[in-house]
Image 1 (cartoon, rainbow, N blue to C red):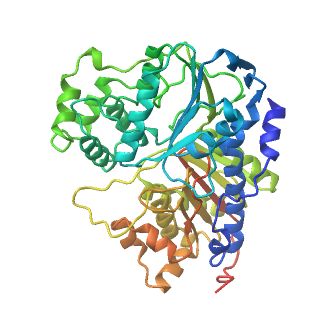
Image 2: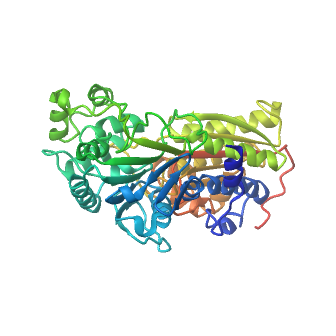
Image 3: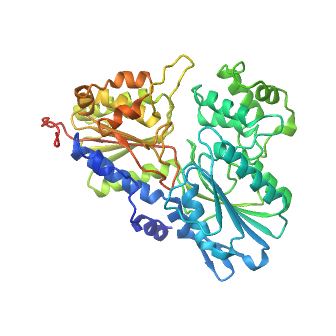
Length: 488
């Protein structure tokens, strides 16, 4: 285990994960920003799912080895690959490369198709996220047709990461794609948590909530599943080469939500009169036959990443730089802008009283904050939870000299923007005012991407190769006299 972790820790790729580091360091407190960006880059490199798969998976002749288990592919008629999610690019490319001509056919449903992605035997579909689209529906039709034609001598290698619920859009008969799109949009804006939203989406899908695995089981085929946990509450991954028992969530794992959970969410968020009638009628009147599967003991699963991993890797990186580091929580939820204000208050406490740790230090967290956009809200631009968190931090952090906060969606796109998230320091609010940018207005109208971009605060990554929800990192130096921006 230690040797495997050390191998992944030391292995680096030529391609940087953060694409605009130089631009981000163009203005503001470049010293604090540099520390935050350096740690974040190291974390994203270690989380790359393609690298992690290659560390445990190999093909020697006809023998496929994954960790301590092996399969004789000469005994398989067909080997299929099905990948979906926001980290599907890296995962699918790794398996496609390892299997080579042993792969009969592969399908990858991705959020963003990067021009440098290379596949040999895998077809790529660009699905819709967070709102499903026709391409995702078309991909599901082809995948399900392939599964239904399979038999006991066939093997499916399935690779799932966050976002698969939207990308693999295939509603049950009686519910249309437009119904599913409207349902997703309404629930995302309702303030509901992702597991609450999934309780609804999984029970109206032919793919999600384990329904893809159920279909593979019905065909009598074997399945090996790889998954990244992008839900708050999972523990840190251990030896990723050891099969993971009782995997839940995604189209390939058992579902830990119920029909009653879906009904409760509709009631709790008072959306029955806003959701499509077909969805509400089905969920409220469906019998036990509509419940999802709660266990797949016959399949083999491997867990690649979870939220606490990002925190642990950040702590290690910070301590290697000689900094004190505290993991505040990997359960962060709630309104994004409130979290940003809270982190600024923690920075002030650290500088004033040394609590919970003396400066200079790094405060680390992960989770999934949300942004509620009510029907009466005015939306003036683009953005997402990470950018709202950092914009709110910027406003409150003027009183914490040198403090710097980064908040990104670890997969590379935050909300409706092309940015992974945002970065702000104690000079950001002043610099925004000097440029005529009102961060309060940007928060009110959910246009933080444009506002942060104007002060070099939008973090760009593209696909990162992982998906473990939000990653938040704050650096707090000892109080020092402000010297102004170093590049202005």
